[in-house]
Length: 165
Image 1 (cartoon, rainbow, N blue to C red):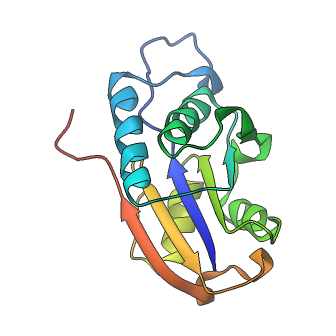
Image 2 (tube, helix red, strand yellow):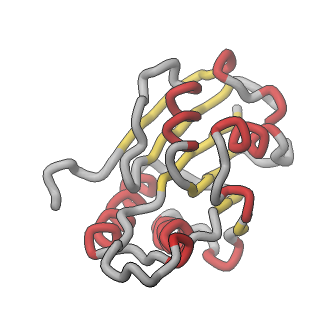
């Protein structure tokens, strides 16, 4: 069994128009939602053996907050430049290239790639990854190279409460 968890960065700030897209920090809502979602993952007993993150500040900050919640060493998060402007097909290739000794992997990134891949893998069950949305896919395979929508064993989707502003 292989478990791939896609996590979109938490809500980021647009307050400073001089800050580049990659450098945008989380806003107050993002700083509230990330630990909440991390706690939900911890409560589900998520145990990633590898955490990959986009280099964007909002993504790596979200990754660090959630890693702490699930007891993953923050210093072991691997930042991949390719995750910043990835397409869904790029994310799938990254997953399919993972070391087969790993069973559970988190990938922190951005839309539209995350929503597109989640939609594809869930056969349309998930059609939008909101900020700090978490989509977990379990695959009945022994090799990451076999991961695709035809090998899905289970899908879990969660997001911060929509009523919070």
